[in-house]
Image (cartoon, rainbow, N blue to C red; front, side, top):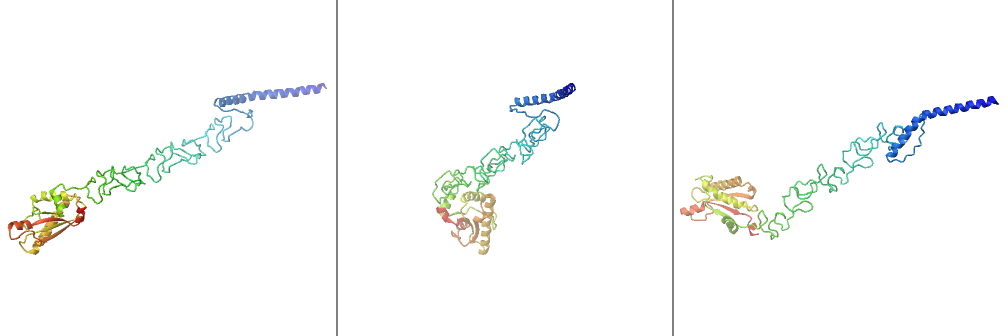
Length: 343
């Protein structure tokens, strides 16, 4: 019996020594576990540390990120996220969605992203939310790099929606960006200084009824032509004399104010010389006047003007006298669409 009791005491002693040894080994692990628990508590986490403190066997990895709980500084990493050596998610493009979960890598800085890490574009203008300074851009509008509509002609209607580009500055436009013209005089609202002009009234560039401000303009209104015997040419030639050019200039200044008119420039001679020669000379002189006008006044369009040489066929005075012949040597600017003058 004594031998049995001694054997039991020896067995008990072995177990005491075993547990004492295990306690000494476990102390660092317990201290490390307590330290981690304190750090997590200070970070505001609710700590329920149920991990086994013994260092033997496989280490636990609660969030399955490949970093053991004992060294994982970010223990609640989402499944699938790529982590660094400390167990914390990596986010290469800084959009808040971890690499490994981010389906749109390299998102531009500042862009708003969805839960998959992909940029959102609420107004569909091609500029991402978060970078777009002009949210709610209308569909179809052209935008700049900041997502704001471009408006090349400054009429308030965005390029891409503007159906009338290059609207004159100051003109009132409709929702399509096209100038409005309430009185139909050809001068847009906003630029028209005489709104409500009666239909058909000839107006100037300001939209106001045109007035005859010179004797030539009044002659044009009253007779439908400008007739002058003061345009002279070198003898037997179609070359304008120097003293005739100021007269042609004055006529040109009058005609450019009436771009709607179709004008015939008619050349006339007296009866001296052969009729065929006179007709050819009068044609050449009429053409010379038109060429001079077109060179001096670029707004005069050749398509609105025709020339005709009448020679000696249409005298307005007696060719038997010097004064009569001088009167017959003339140039006439005749309006072919006189109905325009009656508006």
